[in-house]
Length: 428
Image (cartoon, rainbow, N blue to C red):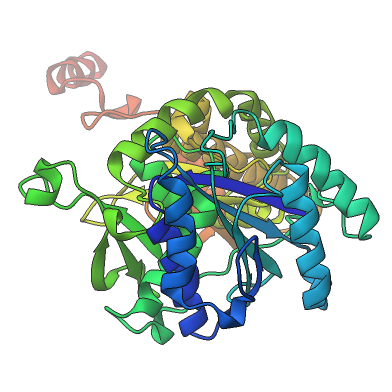
């Protein structure tokens, strides 16, 4: 089981997010603890007023709302409602929220079973619940106890294989401008923004684009850019924006530019310890005589590392980004070192290609085959992976032949006509 805890300044947004899921019939409110009625008997206003009434007891708490998700292994999709209710109750008591009003929602909109819990940080006596290090201390302790007592798949057992995988949004099925579009984007943001370590907007987009979502500030002359605004949008199969862009401020957790900039600073430190393992993975792939970007990309994908090429409007590649799903870290190639930048990788792939060509030439010569026999290789190209059909000896001859100037004259023609005349006269 994996627990994700978030705090916010608006109980309205968190409650509306879950209630909209209920309206879309992809979620159900399965528990209402410390409420006067059962969940099916409560209206939206009654749920909201219960929270607001207690929040009035301490108006000095700015980030007063709590949104928790408990995520289970895909194999645990058959968990009963009663068991999910018991897990939620045990967890909330374990982190010190047992006497707080809270609602439990079972969601069915992802590839893994999970529940959402909505609550507040103000106690019935008006005091504030301190949540500093609650995830590392109380939450981690009770999580392990729940895994044992309810016989759940341990999160530690699933470290190499993620507990669940986020699925790309099927762009052809998105209803643009409607709640479904916003909900689909929100699902992606809930996972990516908090779990991945990125230090810039392009690095964040390297991850979001994998799930058909993009974050944009607009053009430099646009009002959105000048006011430091940000919006999110769905991408089509060709990774082009489609549909209506949605302002960051309209999402319940407000993933605005200022929020992202804070994440950039935090992630700069958090990802440092993981750069060595990523470089080792890339080096291992290159050591196996890989000589094209296609082969390199495929080899790294098998290691759960995605390769994203950065291109300008003319479709020319100028950089490369690595998304390591094992450590949830994102690195530009140049941040790892010169040899891992785009140009550095081109040079290494070219070197591997020439080594492979020479080995193949030597092998053919040893087998008494004609050295000019045609063969097909994949030559690394800057912008694509083009196959060339070429004569091996011709390629090597071009590489090793000495340079000749345009005024080259054979020895037999170097003598001047005057010297040749003198020789003739002497013979006579």
